[in-house]
Length: 113
Image (tube, rainbow, N blue to C red; front, side, top):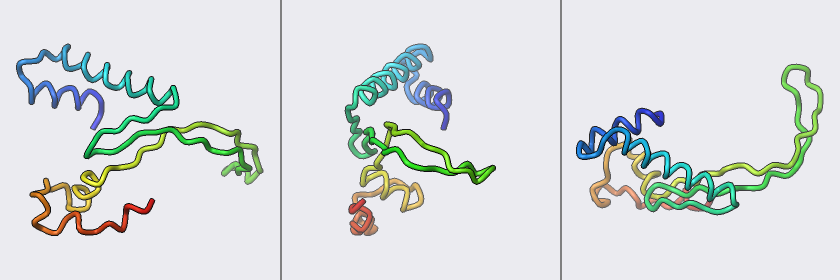
């Protein structure tokens, strides 16, 4: 789903809001998330996941075209960790969960990342 598709879907689900209002809301949300991550913070959306930043150490890489070794500088990268509810829905084939009656959520093997 693209940003414009998200805005269109939200506008369709909430007809009392104008498309411009929905666009401002989505833009404000993404701007706040970006600013928080840029400042080294963490953004957690319960049931969906958490965004954070990780530091990657400098390393020796390889140019795939030439095979030549190149230096890759240290960098900070955004990182996303899916929440349990999102993982369960994806593993259930995108069907909404019905409170665990089908056994979804009983496996905790993914929680050790």
